[in-house]
Image 1 (cartoon, rainbow, N blue to C red):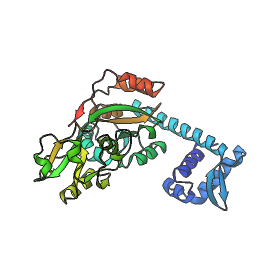
Image 2 (cartoon, helix red, strand yellow):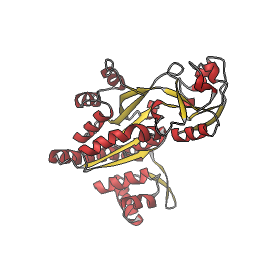
Image 3 (cartoon, one colour):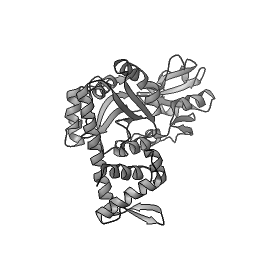
Image 4 (cartoon, one colour):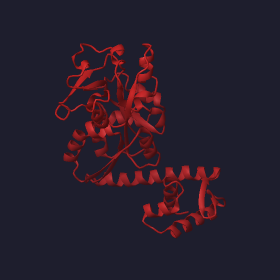
Length: 325
């Protein structure tokens, strides 16, 4: 059994059982990947995949166990390489981050700027997506850190560390009736069509449930995953926007009025996650502390060695998270 065969196997799984796509990703030939896969299955004595002709259709039960172990082995190999790089101490390497548009657009620029000043030779890879897409990147081991808000149930394979809290804000054009409202109520907000995030209408603290508690059914004009898209349609007069507090830029959004909504909607917590047992390099610890100053190396290591998510949460009981405004 060769390490190369395990890499080929992982690539096939990561490319939805498409051997041609896996070969392209590996910069090798399709026949070469097929040959290595057959040799691996011959050595094991059972098929990893079921086939229809030359097409792989699904993973066998035994094959799933092989794939799980192969992925763990490849992660350990990566950790060994990182350990070697860490011993060199030359500040070189790579850092892959999976996050949402809001984090990438409004929170991370200053963090990444300061990180680049410290580590100009580290390659940064920033991948944007929905919570589901970020979770898939984590499962496929394509990212070192996931940064997201909520949806913890999608990331049970990661150690999740709380970074900061934030509130929603109401956004309207200049001259809108709400721009002159003293303290907006749910009843007042319910009189207008709403433009907000897709995720804002799911979960225990969803907007729908908050309105329902007041006996109101909100008129949703548009939902989007991009705060800039929401603000664009607010400018067009499509409705009242509800966005994350960090998504408001005083200069770029000077034509809009931002209204505090912290008394209407519960606070949200943004977290950063990494694989338990992952070997973090020195610059990775520094990135975490640039993102959230309370994430010291000692605290991160304690969280990484915690037995359960509950144990991780206990580490942050007395930590007062900063509020992003």
